[in-house]
Length: 139
Image 1 (cartoon, rainbow, N blue to C red):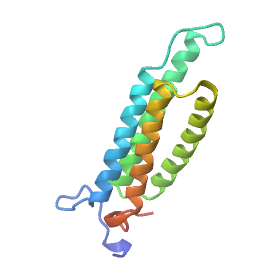
Image 2: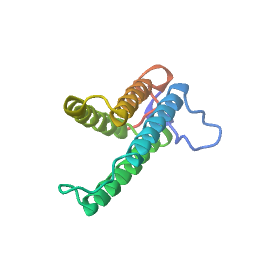
Image 3: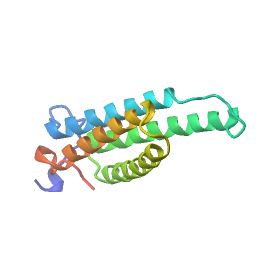
């Protein structure tokens, strides 16, 4: 299928491939877990961490989750290819951060949630490159 025959996913009658549906669903599940993890973060101010820093971290987390949600939507519904590469980059940074956190504090509830979130993201991105998803994404 050449790129001139591709139409946006939101046109009625255009069927989204099954692997793209899996990609979208798994990434949204991952982002839901990320939201849960952010909501469960310890927000107790300490000598090193002020209330303002905690608030800023919460706002940054919300902006990141909303931005990643937009990227998933762009890839799955608008058939854009580049957001998948940005999602790979975000996943790579998340894995490096997760390895550091587990190395310093061990596997705790929040890091266990992040492990599941990363696994869902890997599975979703895998689906976006395989099966009937190939050829779905434009540049």
